[in-house]
Length: 146
Image (cartoon, rainbow, N blue to C red; front, side, top):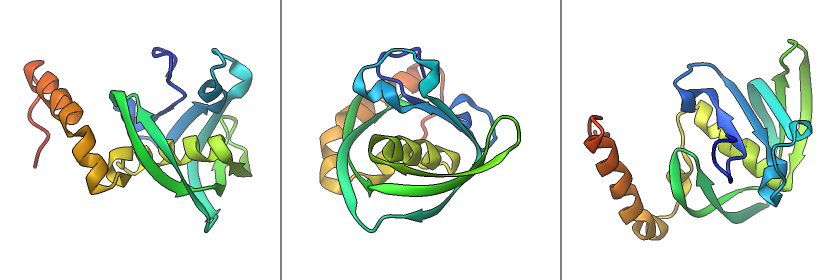
């Protein structure tokens, strides 16, 4: 997540690791550098509650570099998880931290932010998505379309 200037989170499945583990440093949203004190690790996280109030914000993703789109998410979430020492904990996340958590949490279930984008906004990013597919196939990957 630190390889890119705007990277603030990473989930194990993004790296080809089939574990429910994620890490983020939401302080990087506000332009802070690699501050280890802002790093949070979640092992087997679970959302236990969320706000009815939603907010929209443009999100980007290291898996879809160099573009973003508006995504609507709950303003806060309550989560249960285990830390790296195996100790369970509960935490209420709000604002930017809640958004980053939800974004990374989605990755654990094979969901990416563009799955939340409206059809109109998908039209806006279609060229960028097609470019990524072309780069992937040119590099030897198979077309990801079903």
